[in-house]
Figure 1 (tube, helix red, strand yellow):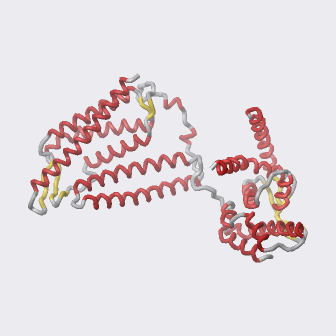
Figure 2 (cartoon, rainbow over the protein chains, first blue to last red):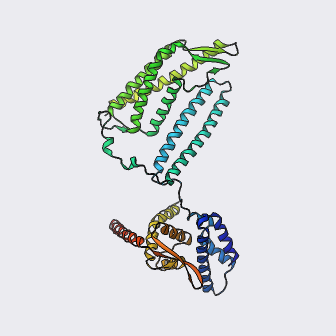
Length: 318
Length: 107
């Protein structure tokens, strides 16, 4: 047979699954041969290379033709895709919050602030890429295993409307899941830091700093607020709509956070020097650290105040 | 963009119809080349790159049976509708007629 056809089939074979390679090639060879013979009968002469090429082009690029024989035509199908998409969003939001917080800390405390913050951002971009690849791989495996998410099929709208802990209330508006995930990531990070399970850098210009014992009275209030807030956010995730009782609960919590930030802001001597590695301008460094800490508290208080105002508007508005 | 969109929509529209056409045409035995010719003569053009993988998929789903046989001194793979394929085709045709009727009423 013509060498052009054999070249085409040879290329096709390089993409075909080994088990079916010979069988598929034999069938396509026969089909090409029939097409060529028919065209030659019509023209009454052998085909030129151009004419043969045109017939082969009609069959399609070898890679595309071979691709259609693959048992797997897509990585993640339309049934699994929504779950994959929300899982990916959740993972990336958590990484963004953690990375953003660490970059912020680096910006405020490291001697070469911009360089340190850029390094943190670059590291977290790689982490985000790796996480996205892992999530994609997991869902591709689930797709191939033809996993069925029965909880999606068993969806019953009466459950959503059944109320929470016996409290039934009319929904006011939806809560975007991305907002809830962002809040959960932030509170979890705060909680881990508060419990000393995650340690940010505590050195500023060679001076090692720590929170003084004056912070101790705030330990349990912050812990309690974090836990209650996480429980509330968990409910938001399961039932993503606002109701008056839930807006009222968030209002109370945000007032508590606001009060806490104000009280902490007004407390002196919350940071102390643990070790002065350079033994020089310790007092100046302490003043800077206090200033940064108070600045952060001021911003947090402003955010809490804004949330309190938003919740009041939501409750007052009909 | 509009021509790309119409191509995409046409592809979606054809995808299911091609399966029905191939199954219906294989109520009598064909090999790939004659099947393609028969469909084209009846007004349905289908390129080889689409037809042959579709035949394999339908066979792996149990809707077609196939065998290599010599004809005109050449080995060819002949396809035919299986018993299961016949039952599925009947259901698909009912579905298609209902859909067609509904669409006629709508447009």
